[in-house]
Image 1: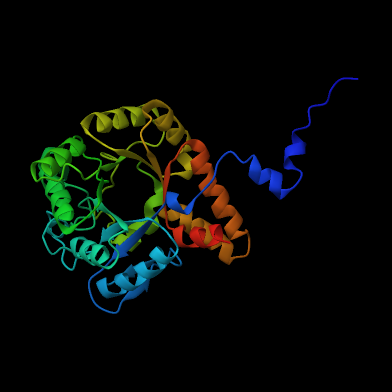
Image 2: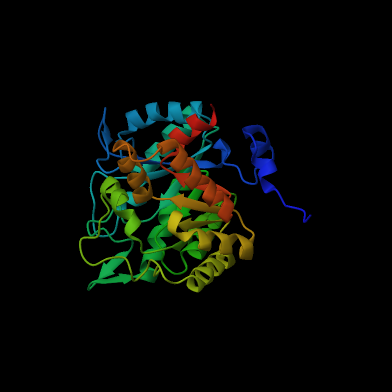
Length: 323
């Protein structure tokens, strides 16, 4: 009689399934994005992202208590300034909203790893990620302001900076500026494979960063292009990136896989706002098992090769992982 192969033997109960499990999501893998806004005593829920809030600085300090209690090791900070202008001044001034949030976080929880988003879109009155002239995004003129932003955040105490703007040459400009100011120890987590995606809508509501004209397709990547993602990543690695972000995560697992296989650097998958919102909406309707769907999605990112996961589900995932 022919021998029957029986892979089901290793699926017969939860004990053996756990013993042979190939990929794991750990709390230590999670980075929690947080939004900071002007004012006091404010924790305003984002309508399209249930459970995600815009925090005033005092409420942000309180919100960090749960992050730390759950063992989440890192936060990624986005700021909404009190005033916006054409050059995004609020991104790089000494007392900017993110800079103040960094100081609060590091004073209250020195062990918490604080990562800062480096971009101008939340701070410009036109909502684009760079300087504009005659309707065009000026790449090289923007680099100086991005570098100033990164240095100001490092001076405030940021542990890592994360440029998300997609200007050509920004990693090199930021690395040079940080090194010049004696911040050679500060790593850069680059949004290297950042696609012009429809999955960002709820984030733009949260951050108030919707472009006032046009879109971001002249600087964010065209979704059909995988080889171009490898080129963008190779350039960022050459310029000094320490960690590579793939964004979005769920529809771009192939990019995560190729990035990890080709470059070998730590890779972060960004589980973006609409990915979060769709799960929350379906869960509220009772159509899905939220915990099961979220954890299956997160482990898919690990299976694709992600070392780190930036996710708005971080608080819930940390709770589920501790059960």
